Length: 206
Image (cartoon, rainbow, N blue to C red; front, side, top):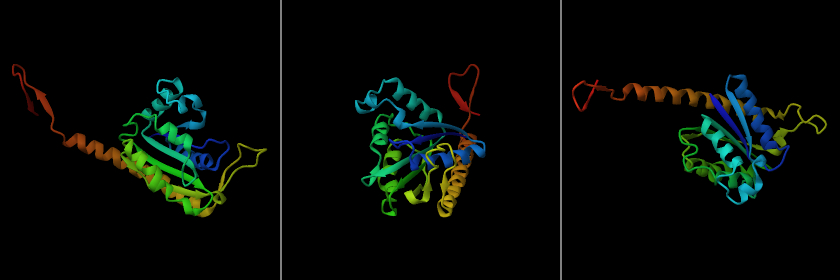
């Protein structure tokens, strides 16, 4: 399974990026091929001026195209996902997420903003053609403990309840991916096969 982690925070370090990394490492431990994209590293001028042909924009879109699964994380600002993530999503092709499974993640100051995943981010992901947008994981800032500043690469600590939800989300993601492959294989197996008949100008079912 090829996975792209998309960090939608404009700041670093950030709790949403830390939560994203926890998910990514769990997926890596289970054998997934995980790539990473931080939207904050995409050229800011290209984002603001919608420069579709800019190398950064093209490279980011190529990463999305190559992934089977997308895990996207954002902080909540003003009851919505981050502006930098919105600017970048607006530059993706309309079918950028077609056929892909997406797991959205978000962090915010309080539990009052947990519906951002369903009412703000999910419609955008669906409009980009996502095959399946999973139930997301929302965490409050107090549930994600960043490593100390003098040890920036130290482990991220999640509280027990959040860790359980993350474990369940990763399990669901794997299960959905496997089911998707089985459905695709079954569809191919049931599709009518066509055979070429020498000397005949039409195709007949095999």
